[in-house]
Length: 209
Image (cartoon, rainbow, N blue to C red; front, top):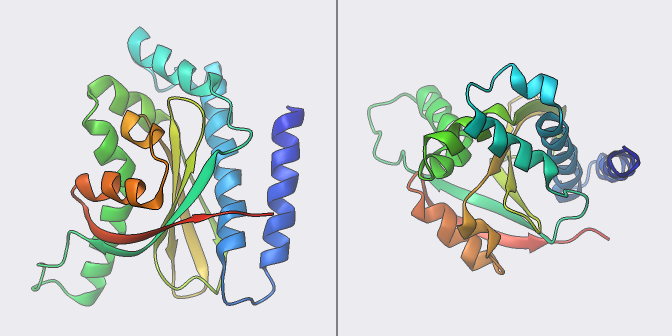
C-alpha cells in the first residue's frame, strides 16, 4: 500500500508539473500512464473484483500472477507516436468514421497481441483493463506508452486526444514474451508492427528525472 501511495503521489507531481501549457506533453502522459499501471495492479490483486469476471481456475491463476508482479519501478518506458494504422485503404469511409476506426484499431492493439497467446490469456488480460480521461490540450495525436518491468506482463497505455482537449486513456497488460525481451525502441516497434493493426510508427525511450 505504501509503495502504491508513493507512486501515485509521484505521478500527481509529474502531472501538475506538465499542466502548464508546455508544447511537449510527455511528462503528463508518463504520469498518467503510471496511474493506469497502478490501477491495473490493484485490479489484479483484488480477488473479490476479479472473481466477478473469471470463469475458470486457469484464467484465475493467470490473473493472480498478474497481481503478484512488482510494478513499482519500470525498467524502461517507450513512447510510440506517428502511428499509421491498418486502415489506410478505407477510402469510402467518411472522415468521422475513419477517425472512429483508427481509435478502435489502436485500443485493440493489446487484445490483438494477447489473442495470439491463447484463449485463456486473452480472457485473463481482458479482466485487467482500465479506462480514464484527463485534460491535456497539448496532445494532438494518438500515442502509446509501453512500460517494461522485470516480470511476465507489460502494461500498454493508449492515449486518444479529443477535440475539446480531453484525452481518453486505456490501460491493458500484455503477456507476450516478445515484449519482455525488448531492449531498444526498434525492438518495440518490431513487436507492434508484426501484430498487424499498426503498420508503422516512431518509438523512442523516455526518461523522467
